[in-house]
Image (tube, rainbow, N blue to C red; front, side, top):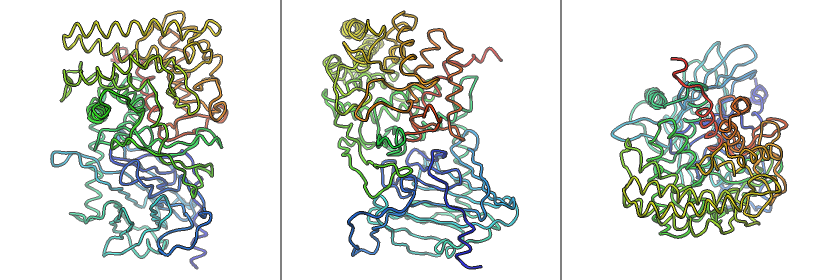
Amino acid sequence: MTAQNDSARFVPPAEPSLAMGVIGNCAFSALIDIRGRIVWCCLPRFDGDPVFNALLQPGTGRIDGATPPADPHANTDTQPSAFSIEIEDFAQSRQWYEPNTAVLHTQLFDKSGQGIEITDFAPRFFSRSRFFRPMTLVRRVRPLSGAPRIRVSLDVRFDWGRRAPLITQGSNHLRYVGDALTLRLNTDAPLSHLLARQPFVLTREHNFLLGADESLAEGIADTARLFEQETVSYWKKWSQRLHIPLEWQEAVIRAAITLKLSLFEDTGAIVAAMTTSIPEAPGSQRNWDYRFCWLRDAFFVVRALNSLSEVGTMEDYLRWLSNVVVQANGGHIQPLYGIGLERELPESVMDHLGGYRGMGPVRVGNQAQEHFQHDVYGNVVLGAAQAFHDHRLLHRAGMAEFKRLEAVGEQAARTYDKPDAGMWELRTRARVHTSSALMCWAACDRLAKIALVLQLPERATYWQDHAQRMQERILREAWSEERQAFAESFGGRDLDASVLLMIEVGFIDPKDPRFIATVDALETHLCDGPYMRRYEAPDDFGKPETAFNICTFWRIDALARIGRKAQAREIFETMLAARNHVGLLSEDTHPASGEMWGNFPQTYSMVGIINAAVRLSAPWDSQI
């Protein structure tokens, strides 16, 4: 059989889609498609260079105007890079997580019923008095039935796909050498077959450990086996400690694990998503880089995990947040920063990459770091507030932290009625956004409560006065008599789902007739069946086409609180059905097709699953 005939018996890769699982260890992550192909992995951390980029480069794209390079490793043809383990004569696959863990299993079967199983994970467990979370991908493949033939293809690229590595070979390893990063693959599979992409019969288990250019302390198989056992044990024990609702337990646990995976533990930052430039809607060019820490998104992540009694993530995040506050020194706070506290995140376009399903542009960096988004001050105080009240914490907040937060509160009081870009980060329009004023109110309200805990009655009165003055003005100026609803800006008439946060932060009684009227108006003008869009006014790109998942979850919460629990449960079941095959959600859902769009997995959306389940579930004492 010729090599050409061999290749013909391996089907083309699956088309890019968000039917993927995620693995990670709170240092980096990787996305794995339904056939066990790693199509996205940024190293050495979430915002790094994608060494596997097939998610955004499904075909071959030539760099326009490129001249032949002097460097033989520079690449004028940007090839899709991925780590594939394929089965000959592929027929079907199935994929699932080891229950209550971040360990992913993929089974592939050929047309004769022969099969293999791939186990993927990133090691994470407690060792030597710290969490061991190396920059290592572990892949273990074993035969299930028959004598299946497989092909292993490891295509590493650097510099956003523009440079191929120099490959060197050792006795049981391959090194992929780049200018800024060198990766080592330790494996007990035949190196000759890997280098030649030669198909071979899988007769026993093989292990692949791709990571830093370091030797293993123990044998390859022993290391892979130990790492899997310890990682499974870590995640099962972590999940066991969650205080979960009675109903929808598996959905909540999967959402919680996914949120935990979004933590960059080294600094405490929480990324909004693990990808860049998945379009919010087909061909919309609403393609953004979400691999950074938005203070807004991180607060909601912390709040959701806190509701499950997982406070460790909050303690990590507060390390990062306290540095942001100190760095600001009482002045402007950006809506987002890099996960290493980087202030500058210059936005550029990778023209040589085709984009998800050919839908560019591929953006790196995010211009929103330049924005003024005044809700950030509320997100800072809300994110830190529990640390003053919760006696379980290893490091409770005190006077020093309160004084720093007071400087944030002063910014909130100064800016709450000033125009800004708003939480939806509009690039060409500034208004006094209701949601921004609302979160500034929340900053002052929570500072008053913290002052009482710290037995500072004068400071409590000071912040209560600020909060009361702001609340009265928001209620007066955000209300639209014409629309019979709270509008998206002071004196405005356009509707915006973010006003639903009024009950999330305790600004208004959910049974207030004005809030109920607002819910009704939003359902009429922003909803496509169960799904909810962010706003009705056109933005920089026209009118939004897809529903924004977190808005749908805000609607669910609002409906439950105003007494329409049956309707809320019905919509929640629809959102659970919109998840992919392993229980993950992206940022957006297309109301007509039900297809997922936007960056993935989206922390906001996974937060919504937890919040809705906690809000709607029957109590434990109804069953036990």
